[in-house]
Image (cartoon, rainbow, N blue to C red; front, side):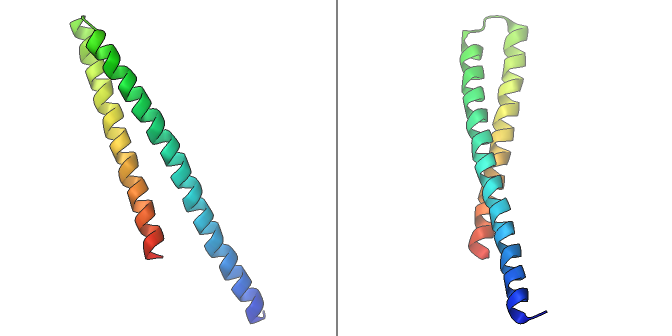
Length: 86
């Protein structure tokens, strides 16, 4: 195989990794936005709720949405750092 073919293959491989990382970042941004919206909606329901059992359940769901959103943000930051180091 000639060097030019090897270089083209290597460039294609690098671009595919970049493309996958970019797609993953976009997907994470969408998911984080949806989680933020869901968490806000749950908080509004929680504040309007007067039933103890229902409010406890809503509080757990809010905590779950919050933790998942934070995990997504952390993953997004690590993807951005990977890009800077490459």
